[in-house]
Length: 164
Image (cartoon, rainbow, N blue to C red):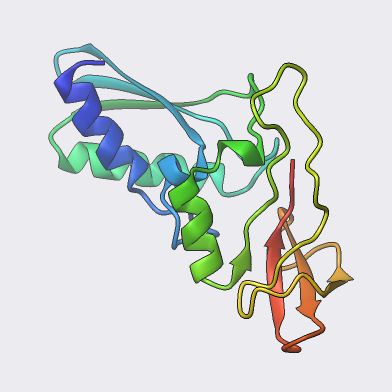
């Protein structure tokens, strides 16, 4: 990656997700690539959290706006569906920011071992008090990628970013 591509990656990656504005696109793992293809031309690849995600158009427009403001006159944003996005693509910082915003981050699906290991715990911890004593209220919350849960210890409701 060139110095310019690294700079453009930082700019594009800092664009907030429209549905989770506390997390940038790089932290969410949807920013896949930034390629300078010629003088003043850049191509960006985004992978939505799920096929048909309505936020991908807003993400693309926001990335174009930020890179145009940086002086890149030609910005092409492509949606890339393979490899598919996974909640394992969320960075540690992204998970921390989700929890800080009161959204339980998804549990890891794989640990890097061949074939992916099954997590040892199925508990979803409350982002408010840390209790693992939580209950599902609805499989869907404010967005399709989140479920609504309630902590049975502190009684606070919270979103849980579903594992994919």
